Amino acid sequence: MSGLKWWKIVLIIFIIIFVIRTGEHYYDPGDACGIHVFDVNESVARNGTVIHLTEQDFKEHPVLVEVIKGEKPLSRMLRRDGVLTDRKEAKYLCDRFMGNITEEKYVEYEGKYYELRLYIR
Image 1: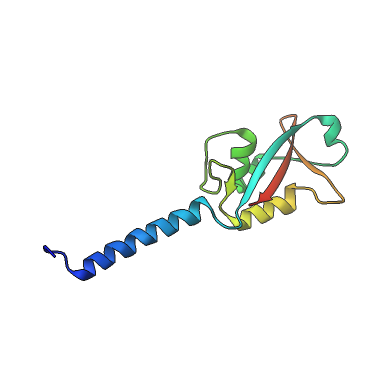
Image 2: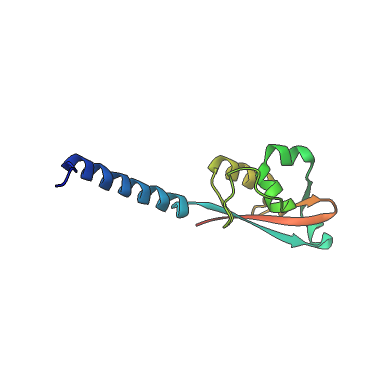
């Protein structure tokens, strides 16, 4: 082999496999959580619990800025395809802002009402 030792070839193959496997996990994590936001009207929101979002909510959870205000990403928690990369944040959002079987929850910001839904791929 012209100047390449066998260990260099093994190292290159290892690096290529590592990069491919890392990319697979990022683009298709097995149990990724995604978030969808649906506009609802006030009459629908009256049938459930309405949570009024404050600027403090947006500071503590930048993913809300991205999905509610539509501003450019402030964090790396939300990918372009709506997948949340932080499982802890996904659990908090689910517990705080999303309904369950017995109760529907809606969020309100500047007079507009939204329903947030998490899904697991």
